[in-house]
Image (cartoon, rainbow, N blue to C red; front, side):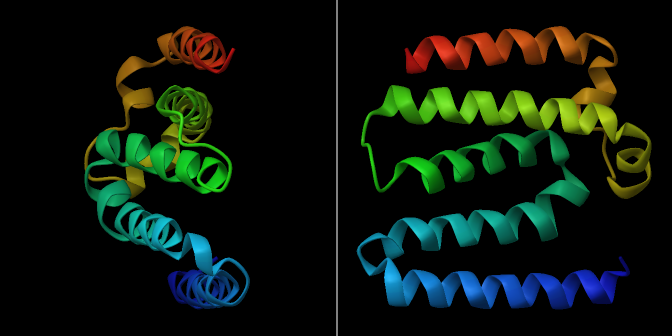
Amino acid sequence: LTRQQALYISMALFTIGVSWSIFFLSDYIRGFSIIYFFSILYSWILKPNIPIFATPLWSWAIAILFLQPFSADLSAYLGVAIIVYAYELLLDYRDRKADKEFCKTPTLSNILGKSTQIIAGTLFLSGIALLA
């Protein structure tokens, strides 16, 4: 995708998401507003500039998105956020060449190298333990 195509797609998805939240999930609009804010912060500011902080923020946003309507248990949020973070680390490991060009500073996967897989596995198990 070109940057312009990505911008148009992002704007369309953002509009659909906000509209859906307002019309069908108005009880959760505060949580969804936080998620939209995290998403914009992640995509436009953090990921290109300081990805090492971007991925944990994104993981929390995903945890809030999935759990807000169902749970207020902090350990559940933490477990889901850790599992998402582990998954994102593996994606960053897969995309490390592109991330070196796209990001101004290295991702954690670029710093850890092959150790990323061991750390991600440990995080997955930790997240599952929190959810059990």
